[in-house]
Image 1 (cartoon, rainbow, N blue to C red):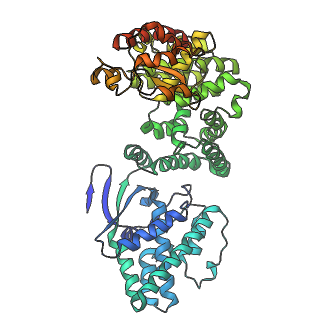
Image 2: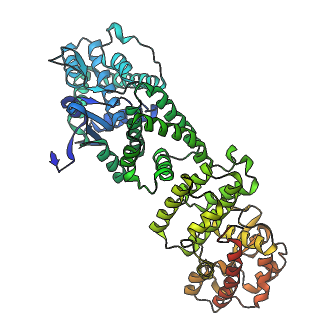
Image 3: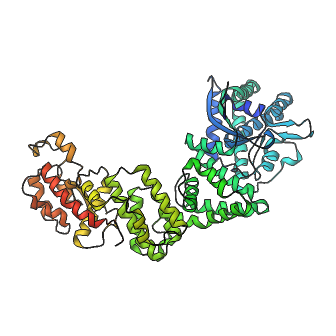
Length: 564
């Protein structure tokens, strides 16, 4: 079935038919063969199981783009196509080994290799990228008796392909052995299933820009990597004779980003770098922005240099122990950890710009600001897209040198960051559902009250200090006069929470307020906890609100809006 719109064609067909009816090319600089043993084994087993009785089996989506001279290029799905070709080649090779040359030749002609009438050459139905094509052609597509078949792997992707071929061969041997005298018929059933009923959705788009936007829209597993491939292809296609140099820069970037432990981080990194260079950029705009600003050989190579050089700065944002922070001191390392624990992502382009461009001294001041701003936004909320845009604008101003100091940055953000009055009002009524955030807020308030530098410790040691909710979630008979509705509304209010030594906390459980008081009062090293005794003998919604109002006045000082 085919449904065609103005720009995108949709087809639903067997993956074998896809290989049979269309000559496909993986762009020269697309990803290499990357499937590990588990991926290959899963596909082989799924096809084997589904081919016995199942009407159909869905393998996912394959995205094609229309390249030069109408050639269809694989933007996403090359791993499945290559592995399916490897499996079909294994069936052909087995049939040849038992003298079944006719069905073997049919499989080869239909799915693997065809004669080009014009050039009189034998050409593959699927051509892999520049690094893998020759090995794939010789080791997989050619027949076992061919002199060219003997070829040693030169790259990791070749070794993975070699392993996939070995797994496919063993898989076909097992199927044939189990089927006994019916082995040829069973293998033909498998090939028929791959041709017609192992189905994929083919999306054919007119160009890479449309493919990139589609990947961003679908937001499916693996498509982030395909988006990165499209960007890489653009850069390398302009590099000319310096392609190897640009490829090395890209590989260097990926190697550094892998140390962050973040999945599919490359596209986000590229977008954030473009933001620092050229201003606010949504993900769906990234490809066109890159084409617009890096559309010549020199600009593309310059961008490749920047990608490699700036990757360490970006990676440092995910690791407070990164060598980047050696000159910044302990406080900045703790600020980095705090920002990670707070889970704030919108600010990352600005963090990145400051890490790239600010001096060490100004960077120290700026990261302290970022913690304060992040807490203020978490408490007050409601900024959304406005915050995204302002962080991106400031990141661009820092990235281009318009803003060079923390004070200039604070000045530029003063109309966006919640004011002292807004923050205090928000803090006075805030509820916190995440325990690690509540512990961080209370620990910072304790430090502020004692006059110690606050805001730098995000996670206290849970084994030593616990979070205690004075009014329990389920108060029961120990809390007469407190309705379930009141408990539900006030249980997670910051004013209802204190820090306590773990040993004491384990003793009091859901005790009444009167029974909890002696334990709270004797916690002298935690002043805000000990001061709960000053609120009298009754703990209810009014007491919680009164205490939280006092905490809010401390919070304004603990997380200041400007440079200290």
